[in-house]
Image 1 (cartoon, rainbow, N blue to C red):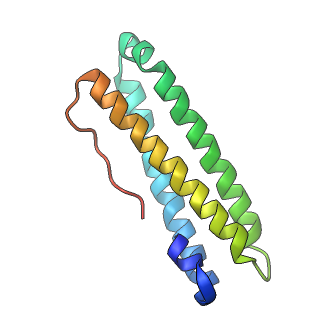
Image 2: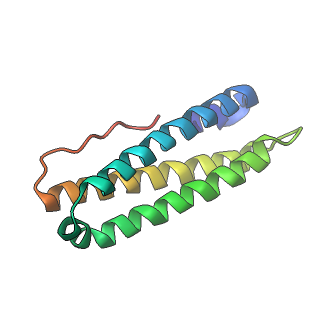
Image 3: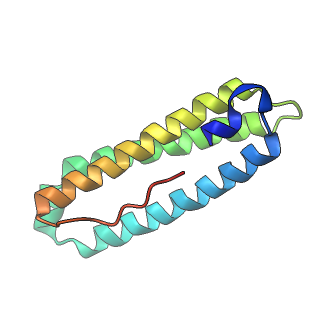
Length: 119
């Protein structure tokens, strides 16, 4: 998404489309996260409590970034700078979320957890 919002070629329609796609991908990540939590037992949840808490914080960052981006992107004349900032925030949050999953997998002895990069 950051590519769409950089430089003189800012395209608000493409930015909106990519925002919507990202929102859908985040929703899928949340569904996968919820399934993972439901499938872990009490011992596993206790063992990964801190990491799961970190993931919840990143989820909150994503929600906040979406709210900020939505406010700007829905203006009649949106400014690309806040949109770029929020795109970076979202990318960082998703990266940290995925990193926590990889640490959980390592701690639980799972070779590789499903990871699909967000574009």
